[in-house]
Image (cartoon, rainbow, N blue to C red; front, side, top):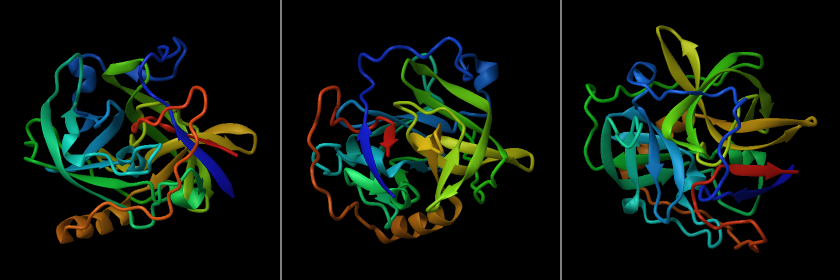
Length: 267
């Protein structure tokens, strides 16, 4: 199954609808415990969501690290992670110094759902974020169809605070890409999808983009547990970002080449 991927800019986008199922975590009490989810300020003005999986490691979507027009990696060291960003303040701010992506990922204009399954990147921070500021989340195996999940993300019209959607479900997998009924929009790329496993939610997938499945809108995501172990090994080995086979796409009216928008997947 071939798909077309493109990114949307966050600048001059309308606000989220009032009837959105997302709950804004805009008070200290509401956001407490979610400080490990943060805003990634990308080189070139793009925005994605990232999550601490260790004091100095942030998990996000691989496509956030590429320029949509040229396919070239953006300047990793120009990225800043704002842990628990809310109302202009962060629990901690750290500069990114290195990044690695899933070896199976390729940033191409027309990709397969198999590529979505590898849309993962791991970022190394210049200094660890103390546990007292943000407690990293553990990862776990992908959910089964019908399992209840939740998403915490930033997005279009709601960059001042993270938002949580609690009432969405896993739908199933296609070519190892995971489908969910959750909402996604520009800025939510890389957002963690949680399942309640034990006393604290665990990350079971990351938001990659949105599209259609069986006539219904879905959010596509990538499983994280096994790939994260490989990404940690690559980080320790000093691997570099690369992606084969990219051919620059033609930018049409309303498109943008900025990195960091949620990817929208069209049949």
